[in-house]
Image (cartoon, rainbow, N blue to C red; front, side, top):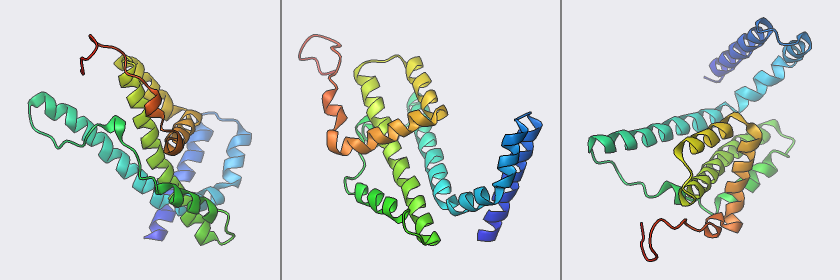
Length: 193
C-alpha cells in the first residue's frame, strides 16, 4: 500500500507541476518545483496518514453539520451533540502536541515523520477548538450569517489566518477566551433567550 501511495503522490505532484507550467507560472518557479519534486513527494507520502485522517474527519464533520440542518427542516430527529461553540479539546492533548513537536527534532526520519503526523492531527483538533471559539464569539455578538460565512471562507483561503485560529484554540487551554465574551442583550434583563 505504501508504494501505491507513493506512486499516487508522485503522479499528483507531476500533474500539478505540468499544470503550473501550462498556466503560465514563471519558468523559475516551475524549475524549482521540478528540482525539488523528489523531496516534495517524499514529504507528502510520509504525512499522508495525517492528511487522510484530517480530510476524512473534515468531510464527516461537514456532513454532520449539513445533515443536522436539513433534518431539522424536515422535522426528523437528530442526535444532540451539544453546543458546538462550547466544545473544547481535552486538556491533556497539549502533552501529545509537545511530544510530537519534540519528535520532529529527532534526527531519525521515521520518528520525525511520526511527530509531523501527530502535529498535523493535533493542529487540526486545535483548529476545531479555535473555530468553536470564533463561533461562540459570532453567536454572542450576533454577527450576521453572511459575515460569518465570509470570515470562515477567509480562514480556509488564508493560511496565516488559519494558523492564528489554531493558536487561538491552543492558547484557550490557559486563557479560556469564552469567559471574556459577554452576550449581547437581546431582551429585558432576566430573559435567558
